[in-house]
Length: 123
Image (cartoon, rainbow, N blue to C red; front, side, top):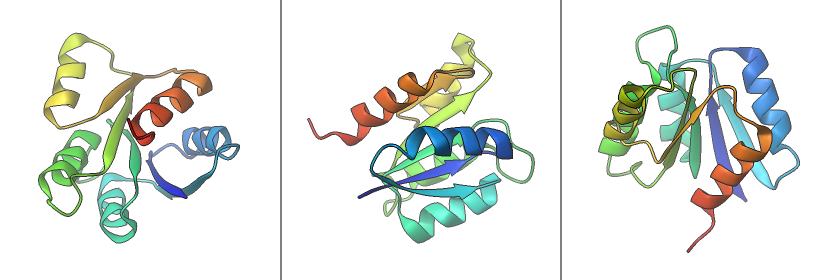
């Protein structure tokens, strides 16, 4: 079973994402901030991280993504950034941080599932 880590500071958004994914065959984990999200990624080694970009605290989503992608033990983890910022410069910053994909809020549940399946299905 594939493991997905949701890193999002808004509990209601985490719940919506979890509810969307519960119908699929995933083991779902959650973290409410970047620091805890990075610790969870190191501990559970998920197949994919769904991460908010703008989070309070020491680490935002871009910083966590950079740390995951620069760690040889974690760089295989797919990272999808979720954000309300949809300008070209924001997308470029996400891709420079190493993100595998970038979804702009609000996104549809179908769009989320399709993005996850594209990344987790072997070619």
